[in-house]
View 1: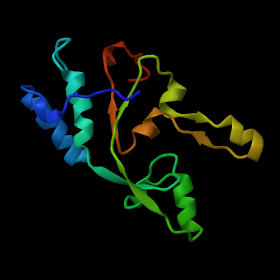
View 2: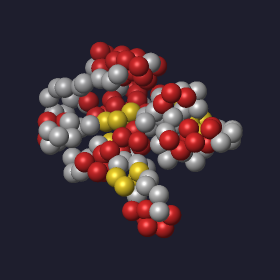
View 3: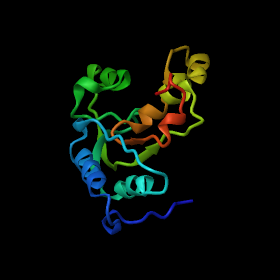
Length: 153
C-alpha cells in the first residue's frame, strides 16, 4: 500500500532542515544530516516529502548493490568481474528513494549476510545484500537512532 506524502513545497517552517536536505540531495558528498527535535515537529514528514525531489541516478542493470557505472572505484565485485571479462555495463536511471532502518534491525540484516542458497546450490560464497546496500545511492533514514543498539549505530 502506497503511503500518501505531503508535498515538500507545502511544508511551512523548518527552513534550515529543508535546506540541509535539499543540499544533501544535490550533493550527496556532504555526507548526511542529523535531525533532532521534539516529537511531532515534522522531522519525518519533511524527510518523506523529500523523496519526490530527489534526482534520478544511474544504476547498473541486474546489480544487487545498485552500483553507479560512472564510479568505477566503488563497484561491487560482481560488476568489476563483468568489466574484467570485457562485458559492457548496461545501466538505467532510477529515482532515488528514502530507505528506512527499522528499530528491530539485526546486524546481518543491516550489513548483509552469507547467501546460503548460493553456497549450497552453486558452491560459491556470495553476500546477500542488507539495508546498507539497499540505501546505496538512496537516502538512509534512521528514526529514533537513540533506541538502536550501540553496535548498529
